Length: 115
Image (cartoon, rainbow, N blue to C red; front, side, top):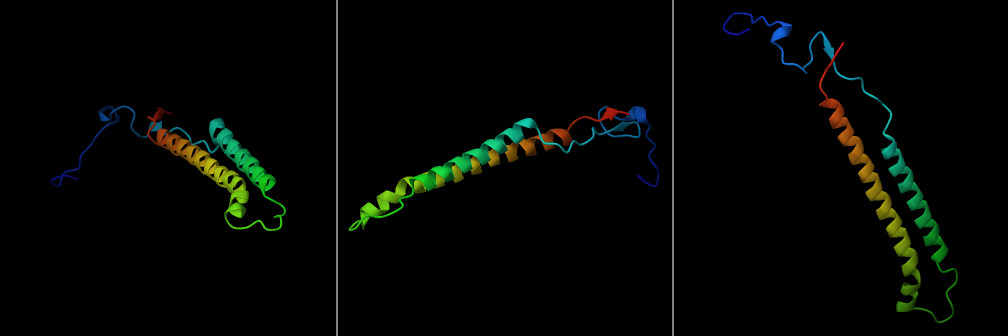
C-alpha cells in the first residue's frame, strides 16, 4: 500500500527467474555430492594410516641410560605421524565442508523453474 492506494501487479510484470505462483525453486537434494564423500573417506583413511604409523614408530622400551634429549628424539617420528595425520584430516574435512557450503549457495541462488 503506497499513499493509501493498493498496488496491483500481474505475473507479466515480474522479472523472469523470480518466485511466483507459477514458479518454484528446484527441490533440495539431501544427498551429498560424490566428491564430498570421496574427500571424507580419504580424510578418514589418511587419519587411520597416520595413527597406525604413529603407533608403529612408538618406542616400546627405552634402553638403560637413555634419557634427556635422546629420549625426546625417539618419540619424534611418532609425534610427527600423529600430528601430520590430524592436520591432513582437518584440511580434507575443511575442503569437503567448503564444497558442501558452495553447493548450498548454488542451490539457493538457482533461478526458479516453471511448474
